[in-house]
Image (cartoon, rainbow, N blue to C red):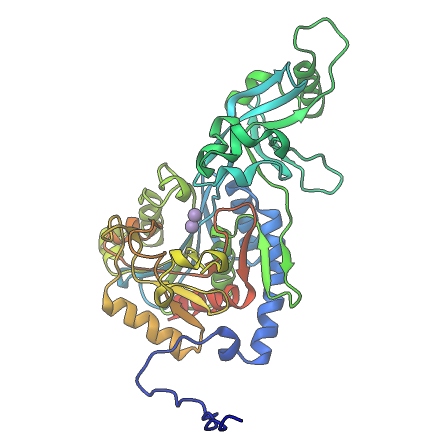
Length: 457
Ligand code: MN
Ligand code: MN
């Protein structure tokens, strides 16, 4: 019989006084705070379900701001600013949180409708918007949202596929039996092409003597229900988005699965944060911008500061907006990529965000050697870190993936260019840019608390 080994020391190693150890929000939050986080997310899910496009998000934000008697300014139905006047004059600078309200999706082309005679269905041509993995967008139920401006200039609003009794739409996919050559042996990125992401919209032909009977059936129906003709699509913005509802995920209901959490998780938490402000030190602004997912190009975006300049001028006509911006502090409220269990190799785990560890602070974004990044100063990072620690708000520091593995940007750089201090702060998201993104309830709540603390001081 072998000699019995020495009993292993069962005592845990003492925690170092000097080492940094990331704590989870579950450890930091009290029981009551965790309960509040879960309650907070009930309305969050409702918001996600009722704001599936940039226009709908602005509409919803406007509604909520107005019912809370807040000052809101809207730009072209796609950008908004909520303002709460502070104790200090405008000339001493502002506190701004910026989130974006656009999400990856399938936009309809300007002449979308056609009939495919070989398959006997009618379809809409689409042109995808933002960074998507195309294979994720076939087969899933899609709803159709947006507006059509008719020949007479009247606007028709669309939101079809959200109610359980509504019809939905879908991009067809091939059965596995026949997919080998055209899909399976190809690279994932090439297997589904952008041009093939057309959405099935019907199959019933009309009885009259026209050449395209199924297409005619769809046009008849559209005219009957909405009063639109085919040319009206040219002056339309219609978006096919996942018809899924936001749902609790997991036995413990700690997670949320939903479309559009990048970046409506931040839009909603910024909104809730500014609604809570009464009289902050500095004048606070929550800015909601569009077109972030395609590089912030356009007149409703972060790249165009005209909107912010105008707001500053309106708040105090005597100030120089450039001077005010130079003295202002900004949180770019955008999501970070949470470590994904089946692909941990793309993350450098010490500097990656994980679900359940609170709001993520990213000193810099960009790709390669920090190209196209906003790199916040150590002084500003210190200020935010001190604030979060003081308020006992769970937070973590992270960048997006391993060096040279990829990367990404936010609106941060467009505002730092204007002379403002800017840092990225937002919840981690798993399966980002997919039709069903995943967040953790305590992180959503941590983000809300962080934005509120920032705007208040
Ligand atoms: Mn984003
Ligand atoms: Mn994004």
